[in-house]
Image 1 (cartoon, rainbow, N blue to C red):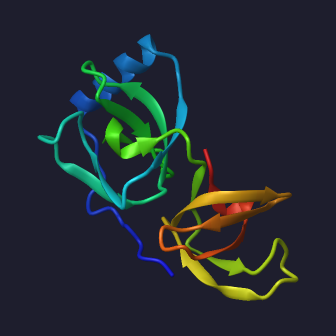
Image 2: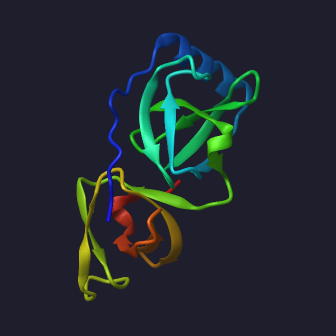
Length: 157
């Protein structure tokens, strides 16, 4: 049901942090974004010359917190609160998506613990939000699998 995309290395250098802070001070905005490609490299700075912080899969949610000077790269915050960069061509603000923030959670057939378990997913499992019903979220992943997860285990910006 899922292939996890774990970070190989998640760090941020001082120069990048200063750029993000400067941009954030002058552009007070945040916007929910969603990875729209099969996978995307999240980088330490606003160009492909910067190292990859991690690689994420389709539907990984991010929050835009800044913009590069050439306006082609977004400074983004992820589920862990880390700020890195993604090229604007890899994201969309037209899809509502989420990610599992707990170590391991059950996926159910319906929006209650009364429904049977379909299986489980692990941290960093990303998906498109189909429906929210009370404290339950119906999702669909990039392979077409779907189910329900309790909202408390998710990050949906």
